Length: 349
Image (spheres, rainbow, N blue to C red):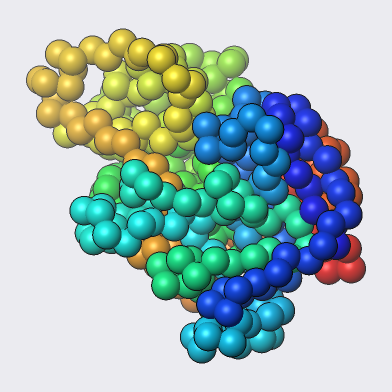
């Protein structure tokens, strides 16, 4: 089979290798689609502390596929079932796992990081992922492409659960990429009265309209603060989501909020980046500053329901599909910022 191995920053190679052997309590999944995430791009560029120097790893943690083989001690799943995954496998015993936050486990394992992920034709699923409820059966009306995108949607769902967006809110999403699109769709499902999206690319701003954005702002050409105040009658927005990894945007977002506004610093920054915040605004306006990372199995379950019920359509997020053999072309396309999501798919799918 073909597998794309990460060897070192900037060094990913498609190779022929054996189909993974599984133990009696494991599964083998034929990968149908695995989308390239911003995390994959950061690992491609900078590496990851869970991939020691000298080791190779198959990246990809946004995965859908079909069960191809079942270990003889595994009775929960059957060959032929269509599945998708939450990537973070918790230890199951710490305070976070016990509270349902598998993504916050300090001893987590993860597909595409510490375990071989989806940029290959067949993937071994360890027993810990099965017992940890990281596998989800796909409804018949959810295709493999869309299923591979439920994971990023679930990360956004995690944020919305904390932000508590409602029908009376005006929401500003900064960043019109795939994550921004997921935030826009969730804001519309929550009933937000107006959704504003800011970005520096006209092509992305034009694309974001199909996901439900009411107003777009090119912040490279227009003053973001002035435009936001114009759209809100000088009041400011109720919710800001920084879906772009830019430190200055986090600082600026505080001044865009209305009284009792909430901000989620969604796009993570590089290590050791400190962001100046006007704490007087936070104090006197009663602002709430939030951070979320990843998603729990519960977040994923609810996101899968939204897609299965037709309340969110992820299909338009798919811009490009590449076979595993063209992994470097796929990473180059993803890094270009053109389109939305790049998927790695098995040849013939």
